[in-house]
Amino acid sequence: MKRVYILFLALITSMPAFCQSFIQDGDRCFDAGDYACAIAKYENAFKNTTGRDKQIAEIKLTQAKWCADHLESGNKEFEAKNYFIAKQDYQKVLDTNPNDIYAQSQIAKCVEILNPPRLRKATTAELTDILNNKYGSHPQRRQNLINAGIDPDDAQRRINAGEGKPPENENQVITLSVSKSNLFFPSFGGTSEQIKVFTNASSFTIPTGYLPWWCTVKTYTGYFTVTASANHNDTSRKDWFVVNAGGRDLRINVEQDAQTRTTTQQSTTTNSQASQRNEKKCFNCPKARNPVGLVFGFTQQPIVGYVMDGVQVGLKIEPLFKYGFGLNTGINFAGFSKDILKFQFFEDDFDAHAINVPLHLEYRLNFSKWFNIFAYGGFGFNFVDLNHNNFIFPTTIDYGGGLCINRIQFNVGQSLYLVNLRNPQDFGK
Image (cartoon, rainbow, N blue to C red; front, side, top):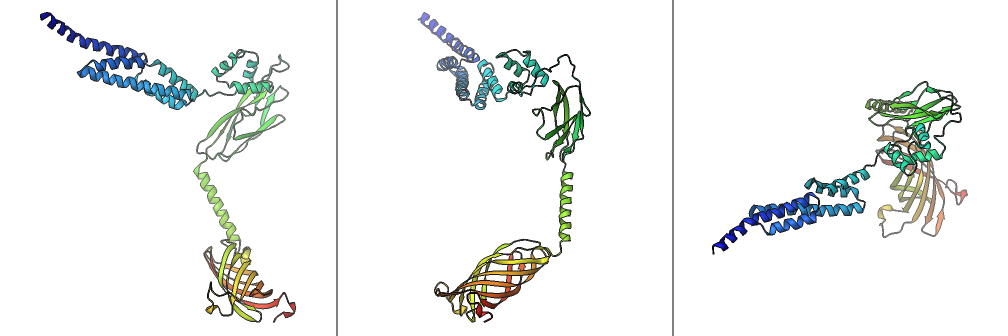
């Protein structure tokens, strides 16, 4: 019995050490980034421990599963070329396990893909070096150019176009200088003075690949000029381009001031003052122009010997000119009845239907943009259908006046019968 008791005590004593061994094995797998191994070890420790060791095993098991899930998700996003999301998943793994070498390398790959190196255009001298294989031959040349910060695709295009070739006389030392190498422009832009070019080469060029987008250059014999467009930004801008002669480059720096609010306010004030001066110069000119509108009203017109009442709707076209003059025309549709007061709409039929086209000259007193009064006179041309069985073409002499408040206009006028164009012998009847 004593031996059994000793054996039981030995078994109880060895259990914590046995479980600690599982946790330590899981830690080694976790640090190595082998999360499947770590999960298996932590699960064994969780099953065979109690108390604080069980809590530790549970926490480590949760961390291992978290890393395994996000590592798997990151790999899927990386294969799908969703590098930004993949980087986030790998970063979550690395935040939990800073020793994960695989997650570190995957993050570096994502960063390299998401932030490619900024490559510049090669100078003419560098193009010559490329032709002389100073950057190696293909395929190593491309990577060597990228390492040097040079765009290999742009360099190859320019080489194919003939740039970078050494001058015909290699023994000649090319000299190149300019009268001014630093150019400054105000925010509103402008054209520089003549920049003289001094060189013993036969000619000079300004490669457009270097030219800032907001600058244009015109070259002449022995000099060139630079024009800068207006800068509408609140920050100044700087850039540069090169002058090339005989394979030699000379850098020209350009700088432009930022737009200031004072300049904008002065310009706005000047334009406003000029507009006000123009308005003062024009006597009695219209303050507002609304040449097209709708017409609705009551009208009386002489038809077949007597005056008939009518309701009129239509479209008004009223262009206004200088000094208060204007023209009133359009097209109106009217229905006439001998006694409009006894007429029942939608039940009775009109005694006559008419189309009216006015042609009036008018004069307005334009007191303000919102109020004016006017008088008019002219002719009215009408087509009248008498109860669907007879029609006439009466012409009238129209005159009257009215006032305009905002965009609502009130007219009062008189129409005098002149002639029926269908029977001109009825003139004045």
